[in-house]
Length: 568
Image (tube, rainbow, N blue to C red; front, side, top):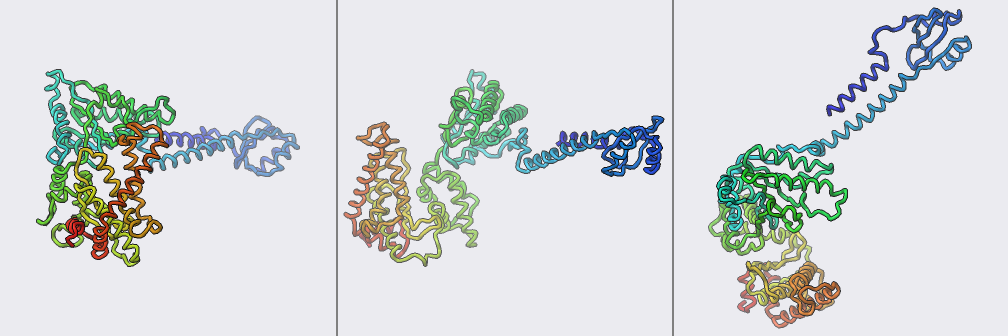
């Protein structure tokens, strides 16, 4: 901006010089045009200098220079030459004016382009403003504010001690990790854990995102890295947190191209800064990523990010603690079963559990009933899992309801028979806002691993909806409602063959793609036949569940158990 102002000043100065406004005052004397013409006719004018202006200059017989008005007549020059007067044309001022105007034109274009870049965030491109990093003297968050992830807490406890007293570890000759990487699925609390480390240590917390360092201009990202680390060193002891570090630290290509130069330079700057730390400066870098496998190996070597801590999905006990933590300031009814809700929320992350309780609170507040009831929690839960239930169902034809009822009854019955450890929390034929005609909420237990039989049972449950349609309506009347189930079953059978190596014919590590496809197709057909046979052998139970769905639209697990057992 300042450079542009200086250039504009010089351009204005040039214009003033060209127009004669800054001359020293020794201007020729002025006479009228009629006097000039008289002198010319008398032979007293020896030369004329024409310019593109309001006046021109001429020289008399004695060598004096005069100035008079310019008639701007196209025949004027010819008349002067006829009278034997030398005529000279001076276009230097007009050429200069043209050049200056051109420079000013492009200068203003450049000025407005810079302004548009600034409006779109371009003012942050050329330099790193370290104030952008969320700096605070202690985050106010400790390990007590985090429910679950006890193993992760244990893994960083010594890091907190190191930040508080680096000399304690130096006396024993111990080298503490300069960098820690938190990895795991989204929403599991990686950022919260980093804040807790800074909060427990009582030091400043600098939080940035990996994308903040990646820019289109080569060298900008590297300068931002250096600026951030300089700021952290000035604070003495600190925690630097880089979220989504995979944005700048992906594996480098063997032959770098021009498009990756900026990313490579930024990564090199980060590696250099981390290696430059002394052994006892009390600064720790914590990074977070959902894709640990994509990070460059140089980043993970000892001496840099040499400690990797998994922040995984919470188990049953952790989910219960997280739900209680997020229920502290909420008026929950005594009838709400927190342990039961924890069992229902398998594969929920901490963020999803917090969102569940928040949605329940919003639902209760909208109703204005004074407290959060079980119905509010259930409504929030099912809206997260399957979407909001459609209120207007008048357009659904009776035949569609019947097909949907048998489809969901097939899922529910197969789950009860083939996966007895699973919880079938709810079966409904009420369509949702996400496009589902209904759903069977089949919740598996918390397990470290699954057997081949259990995986095949999951495939059978997925295929049982289509199998029920074919059993009741015939092959020619099957519907498109099983599209999602088929995708899920296909992916799982592929994992059984390729990822888990559970196929005898394909082997432990199948390499031939055509063979894998044939094996997958054969396994799908086999498991689909098993699903049809299972439902055919329990056809009466299938009819009872489907008729109950047509009557009530929604049944609970207790009702499902009674229908399968034939109690009602």
